[in-house]
Amino acid sequence: MIALVIVAGSMYVTVTTPARLGLDLRGGTQIVLETRDSPTVKAGAESTDRAVEVLRRRVDALGVAESTLTRSGERRIIVELPGLQDPARAAEVIGRTAQLSFHPVLGIKAPASSTADRSSPTPSPSSPSPAPSPSSPSPTPSSGNKELVLPDERGGQDLRLGGPALTGEGVGGAEAGIDTKTGGSWFVTVDFKGSGQASWEKLTGAAACAQPDEPARRVAIVLDNQVISSPQVDPSVNCDVGITGGSTQITGTFTAEEAKDLAALVRGGALPVPIEVIEQRAVGPTLGAAAIDSSAKAAVIGVALTALFITVIYRLLGALAVVALVSYALLSYATLAKLGATLTLPGLAGFVLAIGMAIDANVLVFERAREEYAENRSKSLRAAVAGGFAKAWSAIIDSNVTTLLAAGLLFFLAS
Image (cartoon, rainbow, N blue to C red):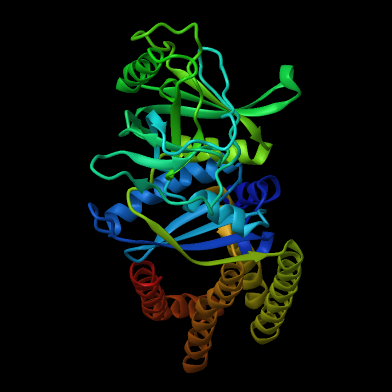
C-alpha cells in the first residue's frame, strides 16, 4: 500500500508539475564571466560568491525567469538566461561595474560654443539624459587637485566635478517608470537610504546657494565615470536646506529598455571585483525543441528495448522487473520535478542511462537465482529467488556505493 501511494503521488507530480528546462533545451543565452583582482580586493572564491549575488539581483531585474548563476572554480561564473536571445545586451548589463556617484559641479573647463542647455527640474532634480555610451571618454583629472573633468550628458561641455559627495552605497533602490503626462517619456527614480538622504540634502543645499545661471547650481550624477545627468537645482530650493524626501529622478531620452537597464544597474549595486566576459553564446529555441524530440525518442527506444530483453530472458520475473523499472523512472522524474531541478540535454542522457543501470540489480538477482535453482533442483522457485536476492545483495551494494563515490567526486571536483 505504501508503494502504491508513493507511485500514485509520483504520477500526480509528473502530470501537474511542468519540467524546468535548461538552456540547451529551451534556448537562451549563456555567459561565462571571470573575476579579476582589483587594487583593494583579490579575486577568489569569497569575492566571486559576492559577485554572484550582485549579478543575481541584476538578472532578476532583467525579468529573466528561471535563470541560473553558478560559480565554477575559484573565479569563473556561469550565467544561463533561458529565453533571452540577446547575449550582447545581457553581457553589457550584468557585466558593468556600476560605480554610481553624485558630484558637485565646480564649473566648466572651457567655454562651450553654444549656450548650455539648462533645465529646471522639480524638487527631485532631473534633466534630459541619454543612455551612457560605452565609447564616452574616460575621466581626466585636473592638475593639482582631486577634480574630475567629464563631458556632460549631451557631450557639449566638459564639466569640472568635485569629489563624490555620495556614492551608490547610499542608494536604497531604483525603479524605471513612464510619465504619461509628458508624452510617455521614461525616467528612473532613485531613492536614498540611511546617511545617503542627509548627503543628498547637503549636496543639493550647497548647489542651491549658486545663482540659477551658474554651473555650480548643477549636480552631476555619474555612472561608471560617465555623466548621465547634470540637472540644476530648482529655484524653489533654499540655500543650505536642499531637497528633502530622499529621492530624485533621472529623466530624458531613455527608451524603455535603457531605463530598465539603468535601474537594474543602480539597484543591483557595485560588483566587489571587476569581471571579464570570457564567453557568450546564444542557443535558439528550435535547436532546443529538436533536442527534446531526440531525447524523448531515445528514452522510449532505450526503455522499450530494455523491457523487451528483460522480459524475453526472465519471462514473468522479467515482466515484474519492467513494472518496477517504470515505477523507478516515474519516481525519479517526479523527485527532480518537485525539487525544481533544471533538465539539460546531458541530464536527460544521464536519466536514460540511469534507467539502464537500474536494471542491473535485477539481472544480478535473477542470474544468482538461476544458479541457485540449477545447483539444487530440490529447491523451490521461491527459495531460489530468495537465495538469489540474498547472495546478490553484496554485489548490488558494491555497485551503488561505487556510483555514489563517483558522483561525490564529480560534485566536488568537476567544473
